[in-house]
Length: 371
Image: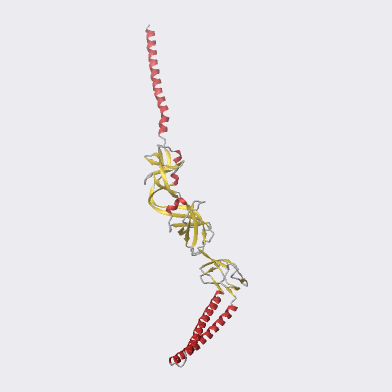
């Protein structure tokens, strides 16, 4: 009986020890099972951020256009005749009044000499009639001649005076015709087209222009912008122009003309600008990329366009505060050169995610790796 009693006590003690061990093991096992959940809550996503800055921001839009001559003039002959000399070729630079070609002036020169002789004769006749009339005036005062005789000499005097006027007009006409044999450039520019050769007979009733002269300093830019910008357009706005011939270079100019109507097909507004071109590097016909500055915005909030995410027609950024990401909707202004103006939704100095935003959601914990 004594041996049985000790066996019972030993069994009870073993049960207690095993129960305590299982309980401690269960607690340890429970701790291990909870650890993964705790670690999941502490995951921090690496991100790079940048601060929203306040700056003066130029609102710009991009467009395409073409370069055109500032002026193009077709030069014709005022009189008919034979081309005796051509003095320019296509591409030559000419100044206003420069001689381009000459017509044969032999006949006109003879006509001029004859007109000079006729004027000399008419002036001699006039002087003779003037002297004779003065004499007759004295005789009329002395009543030595009748009024009718005096009137006859007065008529002769008037005719002689009219003859001088006619001879002068003929002489001026002959001189003009002689000048018209010299075909000159009406503007400063370049010879675009030459449509005549020496020996060609020019008939003013049938022949067309002999030359085309273009002025390309300044040079004209023609382009258009969507009608939605109509309220922002003004003369004098600045443009920066690029052309394929000079990659990386920008040429400045200013808007001079705004079409008063909208193109019904393209729904756009045509504009013209003038660009200084003293070295003639810019050529008519060049395709141009245009950056038009509409207005300057003072103290605009600006961020990198890498910070933006889009959902349908809305834009969002992730703002970081106390290592926590908050998704915030923003309204955009103009964009250029990788930057975007924020009209509403951000304040100066707030940190927005530029790299790593794809893994984030509202309330994500983050670790800033670069700012």
